[in-house]
Image (cartoon, rainbow, N blue to C red; front, side, top):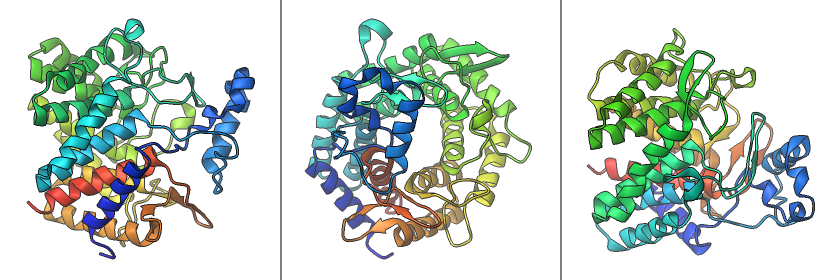
Length: 388
């Protein structure tokens, strides 16, 4: 490898700590102070266009547009998970001490408990997507689950119920607020009050509800998790693929969401000790390996287009191939994928990874949640399992 994996992982962590884990995000454009003067422009086409300009620009416009660096709850959850991987590998207490500090911060960042009744988390910015507008702090299923995973993992190491209780309580939020029956589908929604059906969000919800149901002996939750997961399995294509979701603009197949689906199904099947998803996982993993990676180890973004190259796809590949696959061939492929990503996406002088590499240009903006937090967690995980 061009640089030792442990050194790259260490450098990314040091840089994040230097800025107190605050940074910028592809979707944080609406945090601009411009909108304190014109708040109504956040919604609709103007707000959507503003986010996309900030997200797509190869020049970081945020300092000019007064978009501050902030901590993101999901990003902090990813750093906690990475810190615990490094702690498990090295037994050096400073990793655990750092994870505890971040875990305590996450406890203060819950979405309004008086409104949502149970533990849940959202983004630190208003989020305008094609399907919906989500105000800052409104919970979403993916942020909630990654935070819950981090807090639960922290509770396993520290034996502190203050981390375990909200992690498990997040399952109640998912069941009571995000469960949907809409257009003949049974699923967990991405955010409260919306009915867009997205496979990875629904499957991750099923995985966490099933995991908590198994842990607490809640048969209702276990059965609900199975029912929701079967909805996505039923809609898996015969070649093993999944499109992103049900809406017309969701009809694409990409690498990291396919990996999410497989990891979530694997977690659910393991928690409930069931083999009923084995065929879906086997077919999905075969499709994933055949269509979302090139022979030289390039992790493709889409099944029919390698671009943009993105470390999100690399990081998820590490988890999916090693946790869901786990064979020597999978391990060898992961090493190849990591080597290729360092070759094509790593900035050695800056000691970090770029956001995305397109066919004709590179977006080098430093995004902490989307890029660096994922890299740190996935590389720390790889460093640990490769030494076992």
